[in-house]
Length: 101
Image 1 (tube, helix red, strand yellow):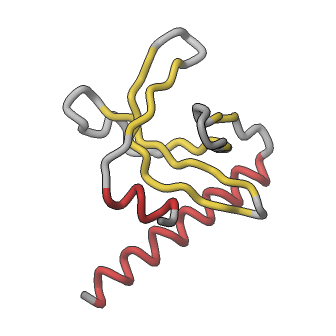
Image 2 (spheres, rainbow, N blue to C red; image 1 turned 120 degrees about the horizontal axis):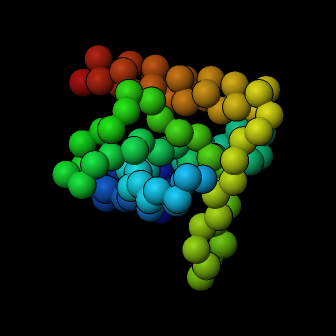
Image 3 (tube, rainbow, N blue to C red; image 1 turned 90 degrees about the horizontal axis):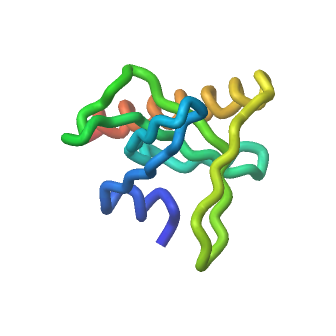
């Protein structure tokens, strides 16, 4: 099963500890691959699963079988922009697919 299919079949969440010590739950929206690197797209949600913000968060993503996935910050503006562009393209394709149905 492809990574994308897995996320479409089940609702997945990730609990993050922020720099200020707060914990926040995020819904996993998508895993993207850009220039050979995987990235995860997260949407912060409340206890009821409702979005807390209008924005998604991007992190580098690395999964090793049998271990917890690793998330990393994206410090480089060009890298961040490339991931944001890839996510915009994904959203555009989703909207196009919905219009076909």
